[in-house]
Length: 512
Image (cartoon, rainbow, N blue to C red; front, side, top):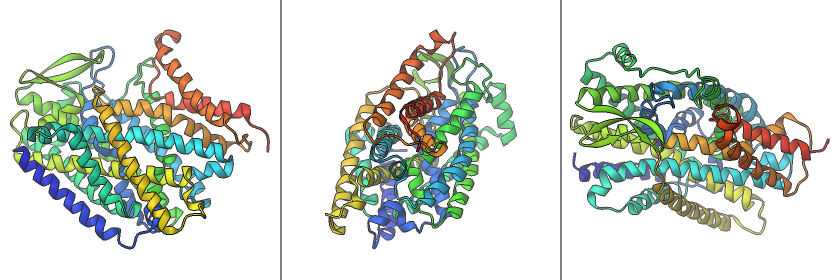
Protein backbone atom coordinates (compact mmCIF):
# COMPACT_ATOMS: atom_id res chain seq x y z
CA UNK A 1 0.00 0.00 0.00
CA UNK A 2 1.24 3.49 -0.87
CA UNK A 3 2.67 5.48 2.09
CA UNK A 4 0.39 8.42 1.26
CA UNK A 5 -2.69 6.18 1.64
CA UNK A 6 -1.51 4.95 5.04
CA UNK A 7 -0.90 8.56 6.03
CA UNK A 8 -4.53 9.43 5.31
CA UNK A 9 -5.65 6.74 7.73
CA UNK A 10 -3.29 8.12 10.38
CA UNK A 11 -4.71 11.63 9.91
CA UNK A 12 -8.25 10.28 10.16
CA UNK A 13 -7.32 8.54 13.41
CA UNK A 14 -5.98 11.79 14.87
CA UNK A 15 -9.18 13.59 13.95
CA UNK A 16 -11.22 10.96 15.79
CA UNK A 17 -9.09 11.49 18.91
CA UNK A 18 -9.61 15.25 18.73
CA UNK A 19 -13.38 14.77 18.61
CA UNK A 20 -13.25 12.58 21.74
CA UNK A 21 -10.90 15.06 23.46
CA UNK A 22 -13.11 18.03 22.63
CA UNK A 23 -16.22 16.28 23.96
CA UNK A 24 -14.64 15.04 27.20
CA UNK A 25 -12.67 18.21 28.06
CA UNK A 26 -15.64 20.56 28.19
CA UNK A 27 -15.92 22.40 31.52
CA UNK A 28 -12.59 20.93 32.65
CA UNK A 29 -10.51 22.41 35.47
CA UNK A 30 -7.28 21.51 37.27
CA UNK A 31 -8.95 18.67 39.22
CA UNK A 32 -10.22 17.25 35.92
CA UNK A 33 -6.67 17.31 34.57
CA UNK A 34 -5.00 15.81 37.65
CA UNK A 35 -7.51 13.17 38.90
CA UNK A 36 -10.57 13.32 36.60
CA UNK A 37 -12.66 14.86 39.42
CA UNK A 38 -12.53 11.39 41.07
CA UNK A 39 -15.45 10.40 38.90
CA UNK A 40 -13.94 7.91 36.44
CA UNK A 41 -15.73 4.66 35.64
CA UNK A 42 -13.64 1.74 36.94
CA UNK A 43 -14.39 -0.46 33.92
CA UNK A 44 -13.16 2.22 31.52
CA UNK A 45 -10.04 2.79 33.59
CA UNK A 46 -9.29 -0.96 33.74
CA UNK A 47 -9.68 -1.43 30.01
CA UNK A 48 -7.73 1.73 29.14
CA UNK A 49 -4.88 0.74 31.44
CA UNK A 50 -4.27 -2.34 29.29
CA UNK A 51 -3.18 -0.03 26.48
CA UNK A 52 -1.09 2.06 28.88
CA UNK A 53 0.73 -0.98 30.26
CA UNK A 54 1.28 -2.65 26.90
CA UNK A 55 2.18 0.36 24.76
CA UNK A 56 3.87 0.32 21.37
CA UNK A 57 6.83 -1.49 22.93
CA UNK A 58 4.72 -4.56 23.67
CA UNK A 59 3.03 -4.35 20.28
CA UNK A 60 6.32 -4.41 18.40
CA UNK A 61 9.01 -5.60 20.79
CA UNK A 62 7.34 -8.59 22.50
CA UNK A 63 6.56 -10.47 19.24
CA UNK A 64 10.12 -9.73 18.11
CA UNK A 65 11.55 -11.06 21.40
CA UNK A 66 10.52 -14.59 20.41
CA UNK A 67 13.65 -14.68 18.24
CA UNK A 68 16.11 -13.55 20.91
CA UNK A 69 18.80 -16.11 21.69
CA UNK A 70 20.47 -16.89 24.98
CA UNK A 71 24.21 -16.71 25.55
CA UNK A 72 24.59 -20.36 24.63
CA UNK A 73 23.59 -19.38 21.09
CA UNK A 74 21.61 -22.59 20.59
CA UNK A 75 17.96 -22.18 21.49
CA UNK A 76 15.85 -19.04 21.31
CA UNK A 77 14.49 -17.57 24.53
CA UNK A 78 11.20 -17.82 22.65
CA UNK A 79 8.33 -17.29 25.11
CA UNK A 80 10.66 -16.49 28.01
CA UNK A 81 9.10 -13.05 28.40
CA UNK A 82 6.02 -14.81 29.84
CA UNK A 83 8.09 -15.53 32.97
CA UNK A 84 8.06 -11.78 33.62
CA UNK A 85 4.32 -11.63 32.86
CA UNK A 86 3.63 -14.19 35.61
CA UNK A 87 5.51 -11.91 37.98
CA UNK A 88 3.48 -8.93 36.77
CA UNK A 89 0.28 -10.66 37.87
CA UNK A 90 1.62 -11.30 41.38
CA UNK A 91 2.73 -7.68 41.62
CA UNK A 92 -0.75 -6.39 40.73
CA UNK A 93 -2.16 -8.24 43.75
CA UNK A 94 0.22 -6.32 46.01
CA UNK A 95 -0.76 -3.02 44.36
CA UNK A 96 -4.47 -3.78 44.75
CA UNK A 97 -4.42 -4.85 48.40
CA UNK A 98 -1.48 -2.93 49.90
CA UNK A 99 -0.86 0.31 48.00
CA UNK A 100 -4.34 1.30 46.79
CA UNK A 101 -5.87 1.18 50.32
CA UNK A 102 -3.04 3.44 51.50
CA UNK A 103 -3.59 6.00 48.72
CA UNK A 104 -7.34 6.14 49.23
CA UNK A 105 -6.99 6.37 53.02
CA UNK A 106 -4.78 9.45 52.64
CA UNK A 107 -6.97 10.89 49.82
CA UNK A 108 -3.92 11.58 47.65
CA UNK A 109 -3.83 13.51 44.38
CA UNK A 110 -0.14 12.71 43.92
CA UNK A 111 1.00 9.41 45.43
CA UNK A 112 4.33 11.01 46.40
CA UNK A 113 2.46 13.10 48.96
CA UNK A 114 2.60 9.93 51.05
CA UNK A 115 6.35 10.42 51.37
CA UNK A 116 5.81 14.01 52.48
CA UNK A 117 3.33 13.00 55.16
CA UNK A 118 5.52 10.13 56.33
CA UNK A 119 9.03 11.59 56.15
CA UNK A 120 9.00 15.23 55.09
CA UNK A 121 9.94 17.41 52.14
CA UNK A 122 13.26 15.84 51.13
CA UNK A 123 11.83 12.33 50.77
CA UNK A 124 8.83 13.80 48.95
CA UNK A 125 10.91 15.74 46.41
CA UNK A 126 13.32 12.83 45.96
CA UNK A 127 10.51 10.41 45.15
CA UNK A 128 8.85 12.81 42.71
CA UNK A 129 12.17 13.57 40.99
CA UNK A 130 12.97 9.89 40.46
CA UNK A 131 9.52 9.37 38.97
CA UNK A 132 10.02 12.27 36.56
CA UNK A 133 13.36 10.81 35.45
CA UNK A 134 12.00 7.26 35.19
CA UNK A 135 8.84 8.08 33.30
CA UNK A 136 10.51 10.56 30.96
CA UNK A 137 13.05 7.98 29.80
CA UNK A 138 10.57 5.08 29.71
CA UNK A 139 7.85 6.99 27.88
CA UNK A 140 10.17 8.52 25.31
CA UNK A 141 11.76 5.11 24.63
CA UNK A 142 8.29 3.76 23.86
CA UNK A 143 7.47 6.81 21.77
CA UNK A 144 10.69 6.54 19.82
CA UNK A 145 10.04 2.92 18.89
CA UNK A 146 6.62 3.61 17.36
CA UNK A 147 7.56 6.93 15.74
CA UNK A 148 10.54 5.19 14.19
CA UNK A 149 8.26 2.54 12.64
CA UNK A 150 5.92 5.23 11.28
CA UNK A 151 8.91 7.13 9.95
CA UNK A 152 10.59 4.15 8.25
CA UNK A 153 7.50 2.76 6.57
CA UNK A 154 5.46 5.92 5.84
CA UNK A 155 6.95 9.34 6.49
CA UNK A 156 10.51 8.78 5.21
CA UNK A 157 9.07 7.53 1.92
CA UNK A 158 7.32 10.89 1.66
CA UNK A 159 10.73 12.55 2.29
CA UNK A 160 9.74 13.84 5.73
CA UNK A 161 12.71 14.11 8.19
CA UNK A 162 12.61 12.08 11.42
CA UNK A 163 12.56 15.16 13.64
CA UNK A 164 9.46 16.42 11.83
CA UNK A 165 7.79 13.03 12.32
CA UNK A 166 8.52 13.15 16.06
CA UNK A 167 7.40 16.77 16.39
CA UNK A 168 4.07 16.16 14.62
CA UNK A 169 3.19 13.14 16.77
CA UNK A 170 4.03 15.02 19.98
CA UNK A 171 2.01 18.06 18.91
CA UNK A 172 -0.99 15.78 18.32
CA UNK A 173 -0.65 14.28 21.82
CA UNK A 174 -0.18 17.73 23.34
CA UNK A 175 -3.30 19.13 21.71
CA UNK A 176 -5.73 16.42 22.77
CA UNK A 177 -4.46 16.25 26.38
CA UNK A 178 -3.96 20.01 26.85
CA UNK A 179 -7.27 20.70 28.60
CA UNK A 180 -8.87 17.48 29.80
CA UNK A 181 -5.87 15.57 31.14
CA UNK A 182 -6.98 12.43 33.01
CA UNK A 183 -10.64 13.17 32.33
CA UNK A 184 -9.94 12.93 28.59
CA UNK A 185 -7.41 10.10 28.48
CA UNK A 186 -9.68 7.70 30.40
CA UNK A 187 -11.91 7.77 27.28
CA UNK A 188 -9.22 8.04 24.60
CA UNK A 189 -7.30 5.15 26.18
CA UNK A 190 -10.44 2.99 26.05
CA UNK A 191 -10.85 3.74 22.35
CA UNK A 192 -7.19 3.11 21.61
CA UNK A 193 -6.99 -0.12 23.63
CA UNK A 194 -10.02 -1.45 21.73
CA UNK A 195 -8.39 -0.73 18.37
CA UNK A 196 -5.05 -2.17 19.48
CA UNK A 197 -6.53 -5.49 20.65
CA UNK A 198 -8.71 -5.76 17.55
CA UNK A 199 -5.62 -5.22 15.41
CA UNK A 200 -3.76 -7.93 17.32
CA UNK A 201 -6.60 -10.43 16.90
CA UNK A 202 -7.04 -9.66 13.18
CA UNK A 203 -3.31 -10.11 12.49
CA UNK A 204 -3.26 -13.45 14.34
CA UNK A 205 -6.43 -14.57 12.55
CA UNK A 206 -5.03 -13.70 9.13
CA UNK A 207 -1.74 -15.54 9.65
CA UNK A 208 -3.54 -18.63 11.02
CA UNK A 209 -5.83 -18.58 7.98
CA UNK A 210 -2.94 -18.05 5.56
CA UNK A 211 -1.00 -20.97 7.04
CA UNK A 212 -4.15 -23.14 7.34
CA UNK A 213 -3.48 -23.64 11.05
CA UNK A 214 -5.75 -23.91 14.04
CA UNK A 215 -4.34 -22.43 17.24
CA UNK A 216 -3.24 -25.86 18.48
CA UNK A 217 -1.63 -26.69 15.11
CA UNK A 218 0.21 -23.36 15.19
CA UNK A 219 1.54 -24.11 18.68
CA UNK A 220 2.71 -27.55 17.50
CA UNK A 221 4.49 -25.96 14.53
CA UNK A 222 6.15 -23.43 16.85
CA UNK A 223 7.23 -26.25 19.14
CA UNK A 224 8.82 -28.07 16.21
CA UNK A 225 11.04 -25.02 15.66
CA UNK A 226 11.86 -24.59 19.39
CA UNK A 227 9.65 -21.48 19.65
CA UNK A 228 7.61 -22.49 22.70
CA UNK A 229 10.22 -22.51 25.45
CA UNK A 230 9.04 -20.47 28.46
CA UNK A 231 11.08 -21.38 31.54
CA UNK A 232 14.83 -20.84 31.74
CA UNK A 233 16.35 -23.19 34.36
CA UNK A 234 19.96 -21.93 34.16
CA UNK A 235 20.45 -20.37 37.60
CA UNK A 236 23.40 -18.26 36.38
CA UNK A 237 21.47 -16.87 33.41
CA UNK A 238 20.00 -13.39 33.28
CA UNK A 239 16.70 -15.05 32.28
CA UNK A 240 16.52 -17.65 35.12
CA UNK A 241 12.81 -18.18 35.73
CA UNK A 242 12.76 -17.46 39.48
CA UNK A 243 14.62 -14.18 38.90
CA UNK A 244 12.24 -13.28 36.09
CA UNK A 245 9.06 -13.99 38.08
CA UNK A 246 10.19 -12.23 41.25
CA UNK A 247 11.68 -9.39 39.24
CA UNK A 248 8.45 -9.05 37.25
CA UNK A 249 6.44 -8.80 40.48
CA UNK A 250 8.66 -6.03 41.83
CA UNK A 251 8.65 -4.22 38.47
CA UNK A 252 4.84 -4.10 38.67
CA UNK A 253 4.93 -2.86 42.25
CA UNK A 254 7.41 -0.14 41.28
CA UNK A 255 6.34 0.75 37.75
CA UNK A 256 2.60 0.58 38.47
CA UNK A 257 2.05 0.91 42.21
CA UNK A 258 4.71 3.61 42.73
CA UNK A 259 4.13 5.31 39.38
CA UNK A 260 2.04 8.47 39.29
CA UNK A 261 0.90 7.84 35.71
CA UNK A 262 -0.65 4.45 36.49
CA UNK A 263 -1.97 5.39 39.91
CA UNK A 264 -3.33 8.72 38.68
CA UNK A 265 -5.94 6.81 36.70
CA UNK A 266 -6.68 4.40 39.55
CA UNK A 267 -7.24 7.08 42.16
CA UNK A 268 -9.52 8.90 39.72
CA UNK A 269 -12.04 6.07 40.34
CA UNK A 270 -14.87 6.88 42.77
CA UNK A 271 -13.89 4.57 45.64
CA UNK A 272 -11.34 1.98 46.76
CA UNK A 273 -13.52 -1.07 46.06
CA UNK A 274 -14.06 -0.06 42.43
CA UNK A 275 -10.38 0.78 42.04
CA UNK A 276 -9.42 -2.70 43.28
CA UNK A 277 -11.91 -4.30 40.86
CA UNK A 278 -10.24 -2.26 38.14
CA UNK A 279 -6.77 -3.50 39.10
CA UNK A 280 -7.73 -7.18 39.37
CA UNK A 281 -9.71 -7.38 36.15
CA UNK A 282 -7.00 -5.45 34.33
CA UNK A 283 -4.27 -7.84 35.54
CA UNK A 284 -6.11 -10.97 34.35
CA UNK A 285 -6.78 -9.50 30.89
CA UNK A 286 -3.17 -8.32 30.65
CA UNK A 287 -1.81 -11.86 31.12
CA UNK A 288 -4.06 -13.15 28.33
CA UNK A 289 -3.16 -10.31 25.95
CA UNK A 290 0.57 -10.83 26.50
CA UNK A 291 0.09 -14.50 25.62
CA UNK A 292 -1.52 -13.40 22.36
CA UNK A 293 1.46 -11.15 21.57
CA UNK A 294 3.89 -14.01 22.15
CA UNK A 295 1.74 -16.30 20.00
CA UNK A 296 1.85 -13.63 17.30
CA UNK A 297 5.64 -13.53 17.54
CA UNK A 298 5.90 -17.26 16.87
CA UNK A 299 3.38 -17.01 14.03
CA UNK A 300 5.37 -14.20 12.41
CA UNK A 301 8.47 -16.39 12.26
CA UNK A 302 6.43 -19.28 10.81
CA UNK A 303 4.81 -16.93 8.30
CA UNK A 304 8.15 -15.48 7.17
CA UNK A 305 9.68 -18.96 6.90
CA UNK A 306 6.77 -20.23 4.79
CA UNK A 307 7.01 -17.24 2.46
CA UNK A 308 10.58 -17.75 1.37
CA UNK A 309 12.56 -16.03 4.12
CA UNK A 310 15.67 -17.75 5.41
CA UNK A 311 16.89 -17.56 8.99
CA UNK A 312 20.32 -17.22 10.48
CA UNK A 313 21.99 -16.23 13.73
CA UNK A 314 23.75 -12.87 13.69
CA UNK A 315 25.63 -10.90 16.34
CA UNK A 316 23.86 -7.67 17.28
CA UNK A 317 25.44 -5.52 19.99
CA UNK A 318 27.57 -8.59 20.85
CA UNK A 319 24.42 -10.68 21.47
CA UNK A 320 23.43 -13.67 19.29
CA UNK A 321 20.06 -12.95 17.68
CA UNK A 322 17.82 -14.68 15.19
CA UNK A 323 17.25 -12.78 11.96
CA UNK A 324 15.23 -13.58 8.89
CA UNK A 325 16.91 -12.61 5.66
CA UNK A 326 14.97 -10.98 2.82
CA UNK A 327 16.31 -8.88 -0.04
CA UNK A 328 19.79 -8.97 1.56
CA UNK A 329 18.35 -7.40 4.76
CA UNK A 330 18.66 -8.90 8.25
CA UNK A 331 15.32 -8.36 10.00
CA UNK A 332 15.54 -8.74 13.78
CA UNK A 333 13.68 -8.04 17.00
CA UNK A 334 11.62 -4.86 16.96
CA UNK A 335 11.61 -4.73 13.15
CA UNK A 336 10.02 -8.16 12.66
CA UNK A 337 6.31 -7.34 13.02
CA UNK A 338 6.30 -4.07 11.06
CA UNK A 339 8.46 -5.59 8.29
CA UNK A 340 6.03 -8.46 7.77
CA UNK A 341 2.82 -6.44 8.27
CA UNK A 342 3.87 -3.59 6.00
CA UNK A 343 4.77 -5.72 3.04
CA UNK A 344 8.47 -6.60 3.08
CA UNK A 345 7.55 -10.16 2.09
CA UNK A 346 5.03 -8.74 -0.40
CA UNK A 347 2.40 -11.28 0.65
CA UNK A 348 0.35 -9.38 3.25
CA UNK A 349 -2.85 -7.79 1.88
CA UNK A 350 -3.26 -4.02 2.08
CA UNK A 351 -5.94 -4.13 4.77
CA UNK A 352 -3.47 -5.80 7.17
CA UNK A 353 -1.07 -2.87 6.67
CA UNK A 354 -3.85 -0.41 7.55
CA UNK A 355 -4.90 -2.42 10.61
CA UNK A 356 -1.27 -2.70 11.76
CA UNK A 357 -0.68 1.05 11.52
CA UNK A 358 -3.92 1.94 13.36
CA UNK A 359 -3.25 -0.69 16.03
CA UNK A 360 0.36 0.48 16.41
CA UNK A 361 -0.70 4.11 16.92
CA UNK A 362 -3.38 2.91 19.33
CA UNK A 363 -0.66 1.10 21.28
CA UNK A 364 1.53 4.21 21.24
CA UNK A 365 -0.84 6.86 22.53
CA UNK A 366 -2.20 5.38 25.80
CA UNK A 367 1.32 5.23 27.25
CA UNK A 368 2.42 8.55 25.76
CA UNK A 369 -0.59 10.69 26.69
CA UNK A 370 -0.76 9.22 30.19
CA UNK A 371 2.96 9.78 30.77
CA UNK A 372 2.81 13.37 29.57
CA UNK A 373 -0.20 14.09 31.80
CA UNK A 374 1.33 12.34 34.83
CA UNK A 375 4.65 14.15 34.48
CA UNK A 376 2.83 17.46 34.26
CA UNK A 377 0.81 16.56 37.36
CA UNK A 378 3.85 15.46 39.35
CA UNK A 379 5.91 18.53 38.47
CA UNK A 380 3.04 20.92 39.21
CA UNK A 381 1.90 19.28 42.45
CA UNK A 382 5.09 17.81 43.90
CA UNK A 383 7.83 20.13 42.66
CA UNK A 384 6.02 23.47 42.24
CA UNK A 385 3.42 22.84 44.97
CA UNK A 386 0.63 24.25 42.83
CA UNK A 387 -2.22 23.09 45.08
CA UNK A 388 -0.80 24.88 48.13
CA UNK A 389 0.16 28.10 46.32
CA UNK A 390 -2.05 30.74 47.95
CA UNK A 391 -0.37 33.44 45.83
CA UNK A 392 -1.97 32.03 42.65
CA UNK A 393 -5.63 32.14 41.69
CA UNK A 394 -7.29 29.37 39.67
CA UNK A 395 -6.62 31.10 36.36
CA UNK A 396 -2.91 31.53 37.14
CA UNK A 397 -2.64 27.90 38.26
CA UNK A 398 -4.18 26.79 34.98
CA UNK A 399 -1.69 28.92 33.03
CA UNK A 400 1.21 27.44 35.01
CA UNK A 401 -0.08 23.91 34.42
CA UNK A 402 -0.39 24.47 30.66
CA UNK A 403 3.14 25.91 30.55
CA UNK A 404 4.57 22.85 32.32
CA UNK A 405 2.64 20.60 29.92
CA UNK A 406 4.27 22.35 26.98
CA UNK A 407 7.75 22.16 28.51
CA UNK A 408 7.32 18.43 29.16
CA UNK A 409 6.39 17.95 25.51
CA UNK A 410 9.61 19.69 24.44
CA UNK A 411 11.57 17.48 26.85
CA UNK A 412 9.96 14.41 25.26
CA UNK A 413 11.02 15.65 21.83
CA UNK A 414 14.65 16.06 22.87
CA UNK A 415 14.70 12.62 24.51
CA UNK A 416 13.28 10.95 21.38
CA UNK A 417 16.07 12.47 19.28
CA UNK A 418 18.60 11.06 21.77
CA UNK A 419 17.07 7.57 21.46
CA UNK A 420 17.36 7.97 17.72
CA UNK A 421 21.14 7.80 18.18
CA UNK A 422 20.98 4.61 20.28
CA UNK A 423 21.01 1.31 18.41
CA UNK A 424 19.31 -1.53 20.27
CA UNK A 425 17.89 -4.86 19.17
CA UNK A 426 15.01 -4.62 21.66
CA UNK A 427 13.74 -1.47 23.36
CA UNK A 428 11.80 -3.49 25.94
CA UNK A 429 15.07 -4.89 27.33
CA UNK A 430 16.46 -1.38 27.72
CA UNK A 431 13.31 -0.13 29.47
CA UNK A 432 13.33 -2.99 31.99
CA UNK A 433 17.06 -2.49 32.65
CA UNK A 434 16.70 1.25 33.18
CA UNK A 435 13.65 0.75 35.42
CA UNK A 436 15.78 -1.25 37.82
CA UNK A 437 17.99 1.77 38.42
CA UNK A 438 15.40 4.53 38.62
CA UNK A 439 12.50 2.80 40.38
CA UNK A 440 14.76 1.10 42.97
CA UNK A 441 15.03 4.18 45.23
CA UNK A 442 11.24 4.65 45.01
CA UNK A 443 10.76 1.02 46.03
CA UNK A 444 13.13 1.47 48.97
CA UNK A 445 11.46 4.69 50.15
CA UNK A 446 7.89 3.39 50.05
CA UNK A 447 8.82 0.01 51.52
CA UNK A 448 10.64 1.69 54.40
CA UNK A 449 7.64 3.90 55.10
CA UNK A 450 5.14 1.04 55.00
CA UNK A 451 7.11 -1.67 56.84
CA UNK A 452 8.74 0.41 59.59
CA UNK A 453 7.66 3.02 62.09
CA UNK A 454 11.02 4.80 62.13
CA UNK A 455 11.60 8.45 61.25
CA UNK A 456 14.11 9.94 58.81
CA UNK A 457 15.98 13.24 59.08
CA UNK A 458 14.40 15.73 56.69
CA UNK A 459 17.58 16.72 54.87
CA UNK A 460 19.74 16.04 51.80
CA UNK A 461 21.04 12.67 53.08
CA UNK A 462 17.84 10.98 51.79
CA UNK A 463 18.51 12.18 48.24
CA UNK A 464 22.17 11.18 48.60
CA UNK A 465 21.25 7.58 49.50
CA UNK A 466 18.77 7.47 46.60
CA UNK A 467 21.55 8.53 44.21
CA UNK A 468 24.32 6.30 45.61
CA UNK A 469 22.24 3.09 45.52
CA UNK A 470 21.85 2.96 41.69
CA UNK A 471 25.56 3.72 41.26
CA UNK A 472 26.50 0.77 43.49
CA UNK A 473 24.01 -1.39 41.56
CA UNK A 474 25.57 -0.45 38.24
CA UNK A 475 29.08 -1.32 39.44
CA UNK A 476 27.77 -4.57 40.89
CA UNK A 477 25.93 -5.53 37.71
CA UNK A 478 28.82 -5.00 35.31
CA UNK A 479 31.19 -6.99 37.55
CA UNK A 480 28.76 -9.71 38.71
CA UNK A 481 29.95 -12.46 36.36
CA UNK A 482 33.55 -11.99 37.56
CA UNK A 483 32.65 -11.69 41.26
CA UNK A 484 30.05 -14.46 41.43
CA UNK A 485 31.45 -17.25 39.26
CA UNK A 486 29.56 -16.41 36.07
CA UNK A 487 26.29 -15.33 37.69
CA UNK A 488 24.64 -12.56 35.63
CA UNK A 489 22.43 -9.95 37.35
CA UNK A 490 19.31 -9.20 35.33
CA UNK A 491 15.85 -8.03 36.24
CA UNK A 492 16.54 -8.51 39.97
CA UNK A 493 18.66 -5.35 39.94
CA UNK A 494 15.47 -3.50 40.95
CA UNK A 495 15.19 -5.55 44.15
CA UNK A 496 18.90 -5.11 44.96
CA UNK A 497 18.57 -1.36 44.38
CA UNK A 498 15.52 -1.18 46.64
CA UNK A 499 17.30 -3.17 49.38
CA UNK A 500 20.34 -0.89 49.25
CA UNK A 501 18.11 2.18 49.55
CA UNK A 502 16.15 0.56 52.38
CA UNK A 503 19.39 -0.33 54.22
CA UNK A 504 20.75 3.20 53.83
CA UNK A 505 17.53 4.69 55.16
CA UNK A 506 17.57 2.25 58.08
CA UNK A 507 21.08 3.35 59.03
CA UNK A 508 20.17 7.07 59.17
CA UNK A 509 16.72 6.55 60.75
CA UNK A 510 15.63 6.99 64.37
CA UNK A 511 12.87 5.52 66.49
CA UNK A 512 9.67 7.56 66.61
